[in-house]
Image 1 (tube, rainbow, N blue to C red):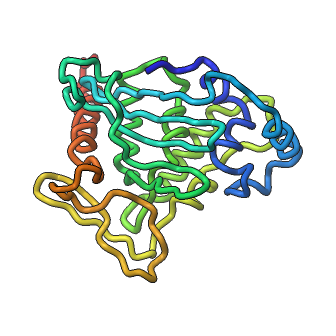
Image 2: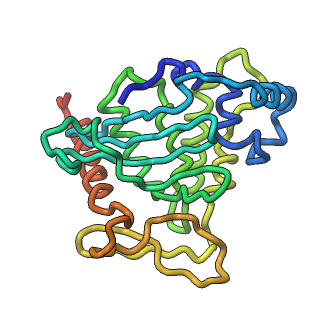
Length: 259
């Protein structure tokens, strides 16, 4: 999977973040767009056949395990997947050639983005930073992937918001004073404290959201209980393998004298 160079440039552009976070579509932060809103409206009206409008970004977390962000700019669609060595049809194939197992997706129609707990995202992004030094600006992975994580009653929410804020701020051009995403914008869509979301786990280490009452506030996630008979259920095994690989990477980085 290749990463278009334009994405690296876009990480420092307010227009990219206004679209990526859905601020331009009345999402969190829309009230701060200012003159950028007119520019976005004009840009949306222009047809663009750019081949870079749809692509995958693979972040290695360790031992050939990848977290994959799929971006379709013009469809306003973003999905999160994972690839695990040997999990594809051809076990000898490069993991980058395997179709990612989807964890969740975000769009403006039927979104189900809440695939990760904050602690899992934190582990993944620390592993990405350790495994790929210098490949991405500091905070880029967290800024891009945080849309797929939510926080709950037992999370350090203040710490999470501060981390996301720092990730966004680190990408902001020094001379730019207009719209820029904030950690509190992310929290508006990610905060499920006090909303009756409970987690269950099994001996294998899988975690999922318990079945909820029909009148409860919606929690849009496909992370349901493992079902051995379902071919299209949430990929618990693959996610667990990715988290295990990330934990090894982070642990190796913490060891004195490790590479």
